[in-house]
Amino acid sequence: QVQLVESGGGLVQPGGSLSLSCAASGSIFTIVAMGWYRQAPGKERELVATINSGHAINYAGSVKGRATISRDNSKNTVYLQMNSLKSEDTAVYYCNARGYDSRREVFDSWGQGTQVTVSS
Image 1 (cartoon, one colour):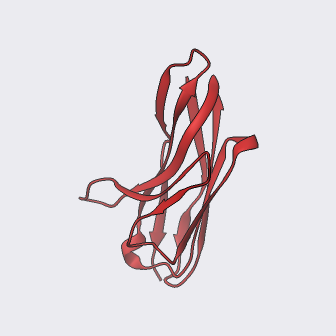
Image 2 (tube, rainbow, N blue to C red):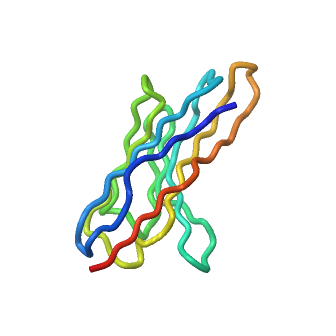
Image 3 (spheres, rainbow, N blue to C red):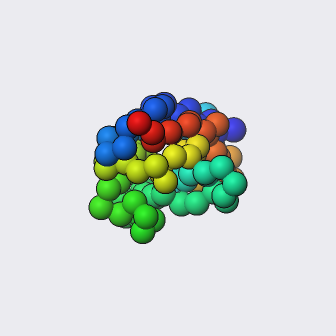
């Protein structure tokens, strides 16, 4: 099994910044892609940003220009930095990792989620 542990988040003032990190551990052979998704109350989970093993990056339009995703392959860790936060960024942020485990079987794992609240 592959486990993801997220850290960061909390209460942030409008216009402020947040930093999230997520470390993957367990029976990992290789991680193909890691990313961040979020789910606001009453809404479906949506993509924030993803990064693959070659560091190709995809951002949601709503965060483009405000978010930076990065990855440390040696630590199986993904980071998300977001600036100029708005109230609509309030959500539970989930980390995701996809790849192959030590048995060469596909895994698609999610973190437990971390709350980000943007409010004054």
